[in-house]
Amino acid sequence: MEQPRPTVGRPRVLLDRRVERRLAAELFNRTWDLLAKKRRTAEEDDEMVHTAHASRFHWGVVGKPLNRSIGEWQLSRVYADLGRHEPAAYHGRRALELAQKRGLAPFYVAYGHEALARAAAVAGDRSLRASEIGKARRLAARVRSRDDRRMLLDDLSTIP
Image (cartoon, rainbow, N blue to C red):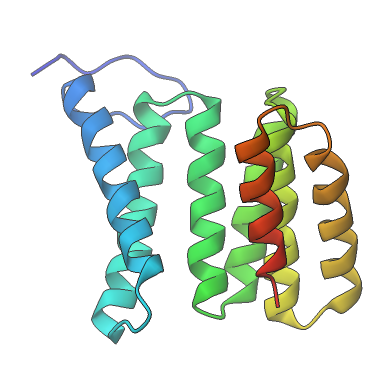
């Protein structure tokens, strides 16, 4: 085990960095597996929330701004999927803020807007939903990877 790393404003954990990184990724993937299920039990819904938060926590310790932004996006997606607009909007705003403040690629900024559009849809706010989808679509034009752009546009098309 490594000695605790001195941090300011970041959690301190006594795990080896490789272990912590692997744990963050495995928890992220488990969350995604649960999101993809057509039917989940209440226990699986709870597990999905907990694994998403745990993944984000560990990325907060060993990840880069990109990992933290993606973790916030995943939390927003989880809460939107559960019909909980307030935490979906909160984590969507965090994903967008991290992407913008850290100068991440347009793909990640667009996904911040995607998260906010999805949260707005859950809240029944059609105007905000349309505005956020428009922002994400405009950014999609700046995404260099055709596959990434297609994935983003496909995700935008699933927002009710």
